[in-house]
Length: 423
Image (cartoon, rainbow, N blue to C red; front, side, top):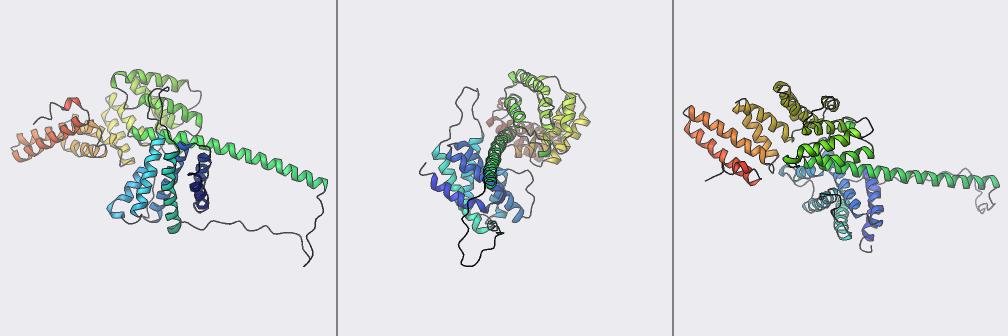
């Protein structure tokens, strides 16, 4: 612990300057001394996210909204905002981000497989960067810590007279003992509350990471599950309804998830209802009541997109388009509703409307094969229409675009694109 302790002492000196980030900094140092290094990396990540959200408000005069650390860092790396944060500090923030992301993900399959191991070396690396970040921020932005005013004494001392040394009376001793017990109870309750809050925060972070992996924005805070047991239950089933589940076993996994969700003895908030609806759709038995409960949350883009999928399955394309459109309007970086809208337009041979939606979806999800695959189909359809109209140059250009899109899809694992991406 020798190489860690000087960092912790420096963090303790800096902590009073950092407003609402103080709780995470305090928790961080406590976790480090108890060798909870994964917790250290997660708290460090949260602190940097808070600082960047503050800078978005102060320097950019913008509302950070629901943006998380990855998106915030990308914003400050853009050319238009170059110089707001020194290059070396941005590099330190990238270090904290990388280790924080690693510690927030399980990266394993079965419960008996080894998970991510985080040790002292990783904690020291992250905290070295965090100390550099906080030191820069303190000099540039932080306010002076508030110091409590000294308590006024009700006794009047005669100049030159020694202070009274009389022993406290029995009643005063009892009051002191009682006060000490009360303080111990208060401190104990505070520690328990901090631990419970810490656990809830960790579970929330893990669930939000699963949303990000699945390409979906989490629900607004007012609609989220708030209790640790409910969050833990969702964490257990979320991987079973992920897009990463192989198609061959998707229905079986979703059925098991649905049974677990319905067995949970509580009334779900909109977030829990969303998972019930999602599992029911993947299992082949759409639960309209759960979908309706999830949609009661205003601003829940992922729920709107899921409702669009349910409506499409019921062949109500008008309703489906309306849900996809709302989802796209709610989150400018949510690629799924744009992709789904593009598919509807392509299916209905409205290629001119399909292409820009699929282009945007492919841009937002560069590592996902499907948007590029169907964008290739849209370009090919547009090329055929141009060829039929005698616009040979446009047709040739679109055929080249189609081939490039199919080749990108093949590189990302779409086997059906292999035959389309040929010299």
